[in-house]
Length: 279
Image (cartoon, rainbow, N blue to C red; front, side):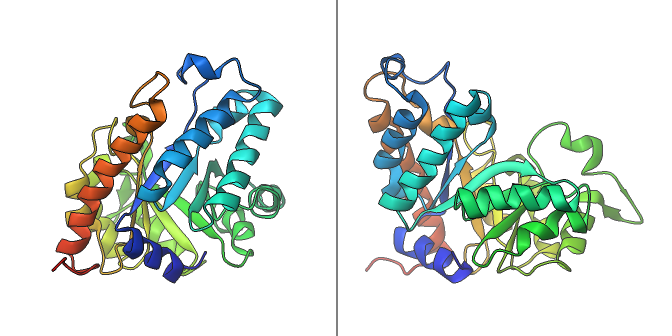
């Protein structure tokens, strides 16, 4: 998916919502556990209920890998289902990979050749040669970890010297590897006050923003400091949507929560003149 296609979807759906598909086998509704593939059944119901309100889905690999080969099959089936039924959705493999070049090349082949994801999250710590193998696939994206929402981000990401913090160096240096047509950055919503600093480093790049919802990040603050004239944001919500309820009506509860977020996002898009006001 190109950047323009993503922007067009945001405008058409009046949403920049990304829904995290993180199916915890210990949290999904009990009535699904008797089925052949509970993780996929859960994801399918969530996707069918929410696809009209979001522009992206982000399965986190940890929730599939912990179930072994069956879990990975559920992940692959989930991506394939979205691809077949909702081809306008931007699919992010939240894998946080990154290793020496030949290993990264295998990771890239997994997610872009085999699974057919649009994007994969990548850790930048090992530098250019660990990231570039992900950048050789036309129409796909690297989403580089920059400033994350967890408390431990303070240990390294905010450290620096000479007036430049590590997350700023990551953003500036990585722009030598790819443009805003193929690279995004992870920026945690709980770091809302720093989005102005991020935008000084990357004024045109899309940002994948986790941390809204259960983690307490402020959508209003993210929009105020991070939105561009193309939107430039994919704001992720996982638990607050997919675990809105735990009984047979869980998908309908997820739909309601996604709708609420989409409606708020629509107001922000209108306020920034990214989509026109209703007459």
